[in-house]
Length: 86
Image 1 (cartoon, rainbow, N blue to C red):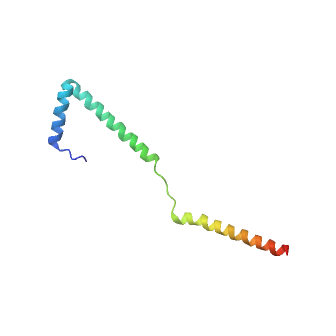
Image 2 (cartoon, rainbow, N blue to C red):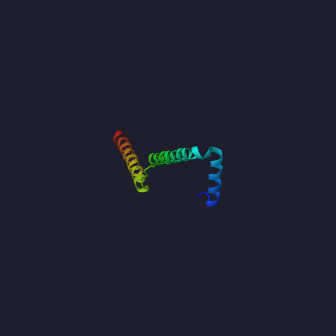
Image 3 (tube, one colour):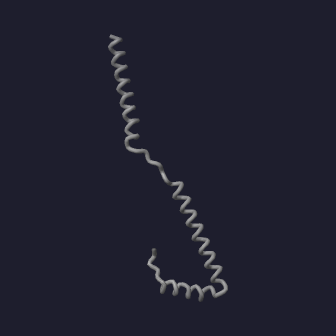
């Protein structure tokens, strides 16, 4: 994922051992692991809530066709009333 190999991990562990000492290193590792786990859970929850269901293009065309028919029907009615008024 990040291109971290075995030599890099050893260097990171040595730096962590020097900074935190042998007593605190397991606690720090546990805290980091819990943080990463919580981050994964949070991002999974966000991605689940942001999924959007898309309607197929054919379903979108149907309301437009129905609207066009309604407009045509209204035009026919207005023409009929004009003829009836004459």
